[in-house]
Length: 306
Image (cartoon, rainbow, N blue to C red):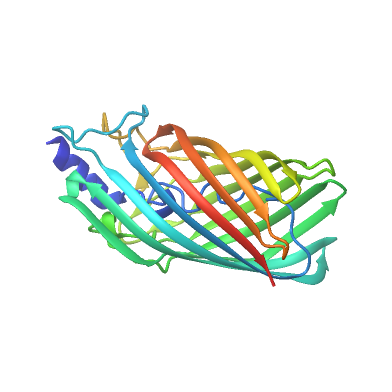
């Protein structure tokens, strides 16, 4: 009976997709921004590539792995490559540098879920992100950037099988504010604060809760190399709803409202080539995971100026 109940609920709401995105979860790739997150670069064109791998187990409201009976658990593995183009103009707006960007992710999602008969996978383009207005200010050692990311639902979605859904099937709007302290000593403290506001999925009448999430880094650059500690924190601030009603709790599966939470940390290494290409590698270990998948995330990031 428990397995049947979970299956029906999951069909209505989905399970986490790439970047842990789901109906009721985050769409952004947490931890993607670390070094100099708040510093908008000089005017020009930039290509950023985010290649990563994330895996984890589904956890309930108490942080325990969900058991579907006979020791069976739901697991997720996602390999992704997100390509981002940023254009920083030579124009000023409100005293800030003006820029815009677009992100196109390619995702290979594999989910094993006992309530859906085991494992299935999907490879394809995920939801595209655009930001028509990014503003960056520079004041001495302090750098601040603000923007509004818009998630466009173009990724494949199947309301009857979330294991193969690499798109959310709803629009989201995410105000962004990032700040970096970059003194001449080489030390750095950076943080990017985002608030994801989701619209309703009309195919399921499911309204995912809004989320606050923060990427952060503390480190030091010495010559071409940088070493630091980076991570992220996510807290869902409103409950998931179906047809206007808060999602009920299912003991051992999720708590009422299915509000997700996670804190992650791990090492981050940076190397800048003679030509100005920045290469970043980092690992994030997720802790305090509630009402969502949680595990380990590996990210390799390249920033290429043109």
